Image (tube, rainbow, N blue to C red):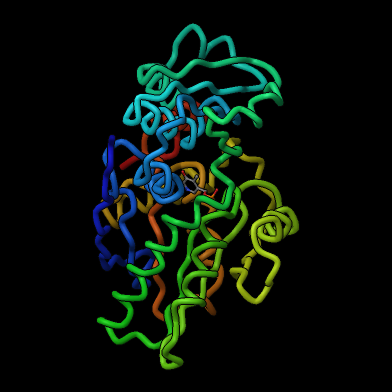
Length: 302
Ligand SMILES: *Cc1c(COP(=O)(O)O)cnc(C)c1O
């Protein structure tokens, strides 16, 4: 039996581009999980599943979810099988980042489609891509509780919360649980997010798959341009470097640059006290940063 509690993650004050923000350090939650994946997989971490022997999931070959599942499987002494469309040759020859770390934890990778028989096997936990599933609500409710407790202690009647989305699971369950937990009308917590995968319509569809009641959905702030997930953009690299210079904090290179670009272009959000959630994912920078440095050697790191 392996049970583990998550720490309460601290909230700090930072100044970025001359604006004050609060920052929830979910990157400190657990040394071996990417912050928000620790929230999403907490249900599996904290409960016992005596008949389970294996985790099966699928997605991209460098994903934070994949790495976090490899950690979970290792802690639980379960096998972990992961399905991908494709493994690039250079990565096979030179494993690094999340892929390397997950292999070290015993992950078995398969190229191809998942066998549908997995869904019926009672000894298998099947995890959707990026952990987009109902069980994620368990850990994200705890995040909502921590935020509301802090908000009340600080006497902030109206708080805006901002976080960038992939599947949108974290943002959705966060807004839902903040709304449901507020019994006191004097306090209000409004969640804003932005799509880093697909566009606003895609994100809305993701929300609807997890929750029919649209009054419980987060607000979507749309980026000025369309990003292709995992591609390199000069402005993203620049804002990531600026964040590091001005706050001394390392953010993730896939989601956070888009998150901060969009947040800074929406003063109506940060005109109220705003809490940005640092969702971890730093291990993924190991593969992204060298790509940025090669592509934009003239963008200064100093
Ligand atoms: C997975 C991840 C996200 C996206 O979370 P969703 O719940 O899929 O929206 C954002 N940031 C980081 C660092 C992540 O690892």
